[in-house]
Every structure is written in C-alpha cells, then in structure tokens.
Length: 194
Image (cartoon, rainbow, N blue to C red):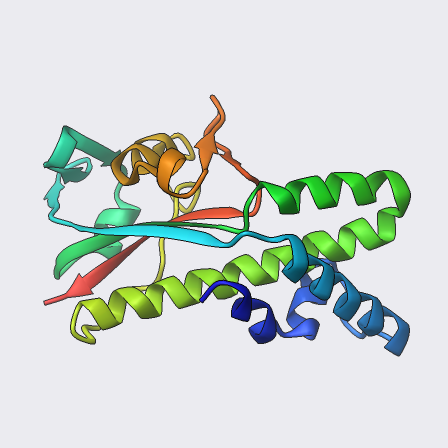
C-alpha cells in the first residue's frame, strides 16, 4: 500500500483541490513533478481497529475504554451495522515539512503540493477501507465519516487516536482544538453491515 498510492492519484482530481478546473499542460506537468516529490518524501502509515459499539440517545458509545462520540449523524451512518471500524491514515510529517519549505520558495508550487497531498491521503483512505472490507469478509461498509463531519466535533479526534494508539502506531497527534498533526492525516469511521 505504501508508495503505490501515488500511482493512483488522479492529477485532475488533485488540481481540483487547488481550485484548478481546466489545467494547462504546464500546470499538469508541475502537478506530476510535485506528486513525484511527494512520493519521495512521504511515509504513509495507517492503523485501524474493528470495535463493538452501542447507539445511545445522544450518540455512539464504544464500550472498550468507555469512549463516547456525541451527536446524531454518526449514529445514523452506523444504523443497522454490526460493528464499526475506526482508522487513522497519514502521509507523515515529512509532507508537512515539504509544504512549509515550498511556501518560502514558491507559493504556487506549495499550493499544488498541498493539493496533491490531499488527493493522496484520500487514496490512502480508500486503500485502508478496502483492507477493512477484506478483513471483514467482504462485508459492505458505510461511507466514511470523520470528526468534523455533521455534528461530530473535531474534538472526537482525540478519543479516536487514543483508541488506536495512533501516536505510537502512526505518528499522528491532535492539537487542543482537535486538528490532526501531521496535517495530511485522516481519522475515519466506517460501519460494517450485518
């Protein structure tokens, strides 16, 4: 899964993250160069766990370690599911450092690198979800739901990372405001159908 994710990034999709709808050949060429540079420095990692959960009136409760995710939206997504899988995926701190360095040298290139990294972490999440589906015997999974979606607050990232021991296993941390570090990281929940 590691570096092959960069082979699966669609350049047009990546440039849409940068707000470019109809790229010219020079912009596409720069995006391909940026993607190669990302592939050379990124350290993609992921971790996931299958967990039992209980729907409660005001959210979703995970008995293991007594974690509670507040709100109705995640509860709706998980309606009718037998279990959930919680995951964290990251491109690593090296990507953050590359983006920061490039911001001082060439802001346009930094924007394209950032957009390519956003597209790459989405591909990584798709790969993790495929791994989860395979490990669950090919069971259908719900769409991914993450802290910050709907009424699930960003602060839920802290509990999710704790459940996954993501600081040790993937090198992902959370700020007091609930943002993930490295920036190109995602916490996701998918439900496994019965």
